[in-house]
Image (cartoon, rainbow, N blue to C red; front, side, top):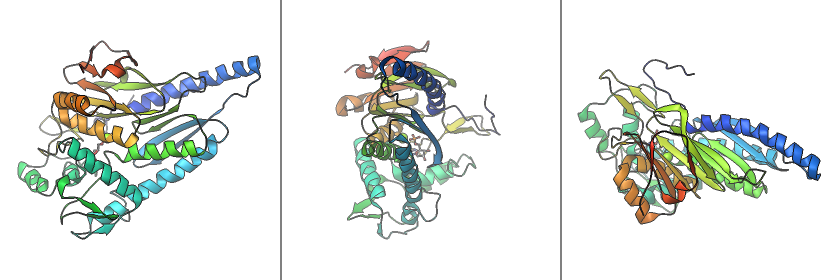
Length: 359
Ligand code: AMP
Ligand code: MG
């Protein structure tokens, strides 16, 4: 069970559920592998696991095979490097330097260039539902400091006048923000980190593993027995429970949910951490969680945040227009909506209505 310190409502994230499931499954797999070894004489693939805290999140990494241990150590080093480059709270990070550049161009590392470039593309495609310049507003609500508060409408209006992805200039390895603007890559940086981690496993010829970067799950290949990985999707109303299981092979499963970080204010309302850049308030559009499944970690992460802000109708239209990913939406009124490709791979564990989105 959880503690609820103060007025916080911390909920269990998809990764916690997966972690437990994975650990239990690993034991089973080890037992099955041992049996196979006795019957066939083939070498069983031993799991190697590592837990690290980086990028403000607990990362649980498991990989199988000869080079798995070295590969996980390399991933650990790379995650720490990304944190040093990208964190808004580390004063010497590239992003902190950008945020204090006061209107001047600033040369940034190639990781930050890649993430900002992709973020700006997805901002354009989602009509600004994703906007990395929303950071001053997120901070005013206290989501980066933990000092939660409800900013006044005037304060929000002033802060919003210093946001807008259209004003971010990225060219020749430099980024320029208008004075007073600040960015935060938190909506998609873990997805990018997942892409980097998957790349490291490939370099080390590791073909089976499951990486959980705080809600960004990366399924590498299949399980050692050849069956697909099973990823649990948390129920946003009771994240001790899960809605169902998605099977995944060589892809990312990324969830954004209102329940992940929120607080209840003196006015009795609960406010969550994903801000609608059009209003400066936490998105309130009837969608409580979004899971995106796809081949690119950065894209899945960016889209899970953007589709939560977009709401049911815009999210479904976005999927129809762009495709290239699968999506699960959970609505406040208790429905689970699935793209047709995901419907085939989702085993429901919920009493909610499960509806396939039309093409
Ligand atoms: P995620 O958990 O991937 O959905 O990312 C949520 C985090 O991204 C929040 O905690 C904020 O730091 C930041 N964020 C909130 N709203 C937005 C938005 N509309 N666009 C970009 N980043 C956001
Ligand atoms: Mg995201």
